[in-house]
Length: 307
Image 1: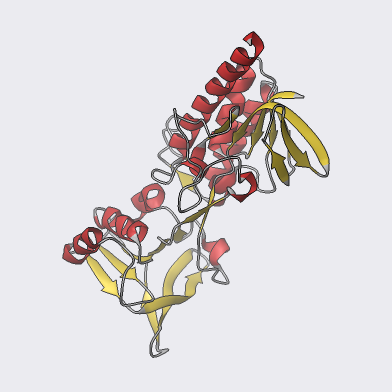
Image 2: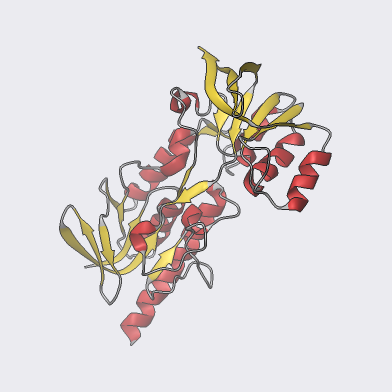
């Protein structure tokens, strides 16, 4: 029987673990098969406070992991395969064994959708990005492509247009899913060009990183070599929430709905970070939610002991 169990090991999970450990709650964490979450696939992180010269994403997560283990957090690199939050104690199943806990903090994050190009993963942080807010700074005065047709792609394009020389919005159809107001803002912006109906067929690179893309006209099949400095995906995220149904409510996109900061509909179950954040999706906001979840878990345990 544990007091606090954390599922997921990104900035939200590790911050929750640190706060829970300092509260004497002896938390345990199941990190999954990708410890550190999305930040382990990024390069320079310059918007996380405390690092005047920036820090590499994997290094930041390694530092947070070391801080957590130093104060007693037990981290298991295992996946939770099933949960049962229908009653106390809360139940999880790991490698066929039952794990019991008074509280659970869900911090499994969201996975950015990509085009699954052959050399995509090797170019992440070297010309390809899934977050304009995170990486747009590195493309000031440069020429970039944003892929997508929804509000996310429009928002990414508008954000990058404030930094870049030119933004080309590529969409496979001649119609957009985005709201009309967002479409109008993009169409009116002097630094944004629409490239429709096209899709990115190939990412072109040298030993330094991305050099361009091969665009394909989805109607004619025509290929076009398109030199570019950066390629941004604005095609959304997939929250890793399916494991927790029906014990949490989710929105239309799969993000866990929380109330009163990080509480879910199940008492003792909290959600923090990108799994419950369809808006900001930043490491610092995830860490803040992790802090909130740990403090709320501690309060829940205190109330249980008094009952």
